[in-house]
Each structure stands twice: as C-alpha cells, then as structure tokens.
Length: 330
Image 1: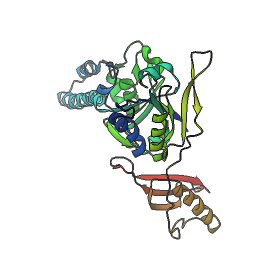
Image 2: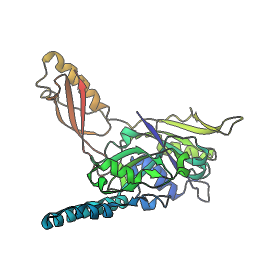
Image 3: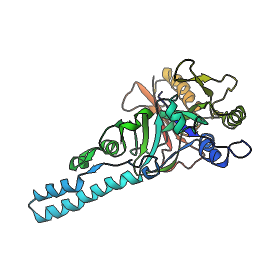
Image 4: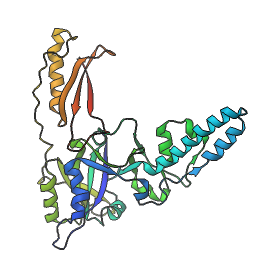
C-alpha cells in the first residue's frame, strides 16, 4: 500500500459553517467516492506543460532524407498527425496532484487555506482502481531549471515517457511540494475511485472543533481515521496526532450470496473447497462487487486460480474498468 496526500482548503459562511463550495469540492468527493482531474490550464502553475517543441523541426529534417515522393507524402501525414496529437494531449489530459508530505508548513499555508483546511490520505491502488486501462500514468514530478525537449524521438517512445516529459516537470521553486501525480492522458474531469481509497482526514491547526465535528459526522462512514496537525514544541515543524474520539468506519459491505457449484470445475476436489473459500473471501470484502463472471483454475499458471467479477459504483463507470480479476495461489 502506498499513501499520498491531498491538501484541500475549507471556507466558511457567515454563520461559521462550511460553505457550499467546501461541501461541493471537499466533502462531496469523499462521500461519493470520486476525484477530480483538472486539465493543465486549470492548475496554479502557468508553466504547466511547457516544453521545448522540436517535433516539427525534427520531422522536417527527417523527411528531407526520404527521396521517394509517395513515401514522403505518406510519412509526412502520419508524423505530423502524431506530433499534433502529442501537443493536444498536454491540453486534454487530467492531472490529480498529490504530495508525499502531509505536514509541510508551506503546503498547509498555500493549499490548506492558511491551516484552515484538511489533508486527505489516499491509498494509491484503490484511488486508481477504476481508471481506464492504458490511459493512467503515476509518477513523481521532476524539478528542473529548464523545460524538457520533445523531438522526433518522442514519436517512437511509449505513452508513459511522453506524458512524463510534458506534464512531469516543474521548476525547482516548487520542490517543497514533493509532488506525485496521477494523470489520465486525453481524459479529464471526475473519475470514480474505490470507496476504501480514503484512509484518513487530517484537520489543520485553525479548523474549529465545531467544523471538525461536522466533517466527521458527514464522512465517518467512509473514513476510518482522523488526525489533527499539532506544533512540535521547540521546533519549526508540525506532526499528525490521532484523534481517538473520532473513530470512523469502512463502508458497509453486504455479503453476496453466490452459487459456487459450477465454479472451479478443473480444480481437484481436495482444493476446490479451499478455492471457493478464498474466492468467497475476495468478493465478500469488496464493496463494489456486483456479479460473479467466472471462477476457475488459471490456464497460464496451474498453481493459481482466479475469480472474475463485475463491479458497480454510484457514478457511471464507463469508460472506466467494470471488471475485476483476482488471482490467488492454491
């Protein structure tokens, strides 16, 4: 399990309660189990996606070496289309920015509304569980003095390398953020995540007891732990302290009733009961389980079995992954 952290500001209305913006942008995504990936133009760094574009110059140089007119025309169209798609991808891709550090004083000041905010802890695997396969990229941000260069060689690189070059670099002035990114190429907006992705909420120093209680009551069905930021005596540092009075819960799971009689037909009888027991445990622990598709011995590795099932979410899963495969040894 890998945990990463999202700083979120809170704002209050005249009565001192969470305003509509905080409910919509901070609380609602937790309760409805989704996260929002804005396009680069909506991020707070105007240099997002800036790179030295040498694609066209590289293509022109390459085409000069192609002597056959028909071949040159065919290559020209495909190469320029690929270059155009790379540039458009930088504008259309969604970026979810996280941090490795939940106790950074500058982050709390800038993104936590001067310590009147929260930090949400995410389990990365559960966060990206339903992401469209082939579109998701996860990586540390690199901090460099100069933007990267994209040239002709980028057209033959895999998508992950190109995405990292375009949207994985920032100025060293941002290095205190220790940023980790979840990126969807050519997709932005809301994306559903597993109910269990949120592992904790940490309250900032200036969040009042009344607001803490309100947030706890609104989110306790989905958030197992709550913390507060405290100042370390005699140091310019903060630390997280567990709020034992705020004991949250994981989402309630309704145990499915499944007829396993036609499953694991290729498994020896002495292992069949074991396989069914393990498979039942897998689907019973998944709050998104909808319907069993298949449970059988692996054709690739006979020492393993697998269970495949359809999943559901309160949000529309399309084009996200609607199916889950879980392998386990026998």
